[in-house]
Length: 420
Image (tube, rainbow, N blue to C red; front, side, top):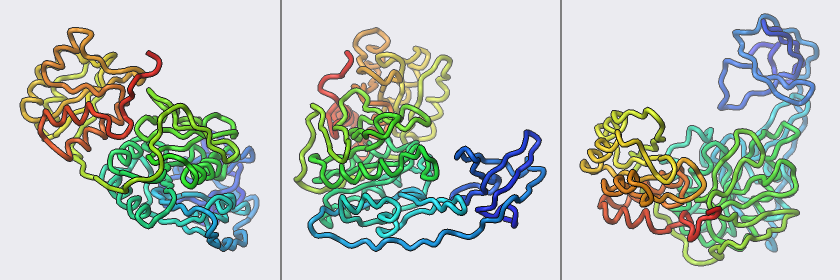
């Protein structure tokens, strides 16, 4: 980094495409080195590839940082206590308005300084589990998160918040739902927009996650995120029924084939008609997973050689994201049979999202059932994929696997599918 691209400098960046005026932003630890990011006068950030830049002119040097002293967090015995487990770079953040930089909060003091409303709700414990973009999270990370969550619950906290990138949040929520038996709420939250943007949802989501974790009258894994594009309320989505449905909207998460647990507005939870597991009971962990499971989307022209290759590579399970009620092209049948005969478990979810897999309606589905394909009821493909990993972590017996996949383990199967 040279003197022209120091964070805080106001610069004119010239490229072949045009000129850009803004403040040079600090780059997160996980960011690449090939771009500089500047904040434009309209408040938006843009990244510019360094090899596209022809000239940089400094308009104003503003490299001094704001003086910052974290607020001391004082525990209040009259309030509930929650633990916040961070899995990404920023669990909450404050903006340095001199440099434009965003600074992560990794301690209770930094957290309540960044989001002071948290201290009004509960006592806060903070722990960094790891520091990853959510697209880089792998199944072994789910196990790590489950273990750390279990440890915090055993300490006697009233709830746990897990901060997480939004891209794969619903995979993690499903995994924790199967792995953990919990007497308190386990709340996963994140942000669609970063804390330096005026439209950031980070603070609201974290505040409402604290409400859910500390006062929620239920004991299961959930996701708390914005319920609409405005800031009036958030939604509590069941961990096995949640799905990200938009790339950038703040209300990207929806409950699929079921009802949300409730909504949070003005720090008050309003519960839906859904029957929730109440607080209390035992705390347990069962984090055995078979990682060699493949999620395969069925599409026109899909080659049976793909399934053959997965079988040859030793995959223990294949979750087919089939069409309609749970179908594939019949040119795949021989490869599916070969996979099942070799000991690979093949299960079926639907790519339509809403509705239930029913492979008894058409001859295609019935033939797949005869081959031994396991239907996944009204689970999303992502939840079914995770559940198959968890089931295969416990048994390779096909009869037992069918039983596990057909039995409601963590609210993943609805008694009645909505919108029928």
